Image (tube, rainbow, N blue to C red; front, side, top):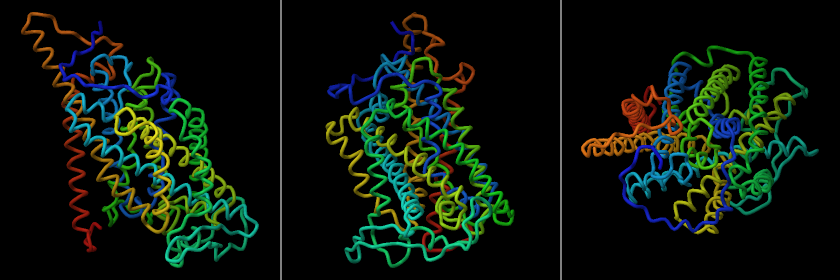
Length: 491
């Protein structure tokens, strides 16, 4: 039998009535795992970072990034360890999704809480990815359309078909180099006061492109994720060069800023990948190291985040809340615009089907709805509501609020609680064996998710990081309360 830590837990009745063809096999390699994780981390949330650095300075966000990087990596690996401790799952041979972990460790009520938070977390990731990509899709239509226009169905205040054309064009169309000043409101389609709630042509085109991928399984999506991963690094290089061309002014990003209200939520939103870990464990190859995959992915992504945030903030006097709007505008050089188009449609856009697939997996395995309704709630429903967030600052507000209220607790607090509960049950099992005069079972190297040296301090590390994150979240909540309707010093 297995020599993993035995768990003395309640028996869970599972129907396992789902169709196995709805899921993928255990085929994801180490490289594929890093690609998938980095792509999930480097999504729509990174688009707000230049503005975050301009508002909060470079010291506090950078420190918070490093803390959240360590916390998210430990949360992911410790959660994986808790999953491996479940009965009959030492090699991740069972299909266990995120909420099911909490049912087996804490009971059905904990499962329901986890399911609600997970659903809200994945919806926030899906909606922000759709909105960010759709805006750039409309900018791309303006770029390729000879009339330099894009179109939309306006729903309010008066139903109508409307046209948007930029009010300003630079005198010279540059291939590369510094872009002339450009009003961001005049550069992003349908952001003017005259437009109401709209469903744009770019939104519809994006939906047609992403819907087929949303019906796939996680392992079937890997080839597209390789494309997204390669383009991510090419795009970041082009963006960094463009930032340097613009001229880096250190006065734009001071050491300490004057507005920290949305900073923590924006940073946490970028590390919302922990919830995808159980889905990945179900389809990764057995020899793929959890610890190595997570640390490689988070360190790589954090370096990209800080570079984009600092240099993007230094390059523009008043960067837009979604910096791709600035780079894709008609004021930017052609190379930068084309790269921004590709980045939005491929890197950010292709993250949407991955979160859709994970939502579908959790709805089916968690036995919330039937398979048919799981496809509707994971694929159809997000496209039915995402256009409501297309206009104004709703995109930035959704990232900041969901980062603190939803992504923080579910990606950092719940995984550490699962880890501590798993350790507690394993310790109780060991004491029972000792009291019965039987030897305790030491986990074989093949069963270990984290290194043995780190495992000895696992409980202490989990407590420390969980309380640190809770303190940061409480500080952010307090700051939000102080800033509501006022303009006190740190808002």
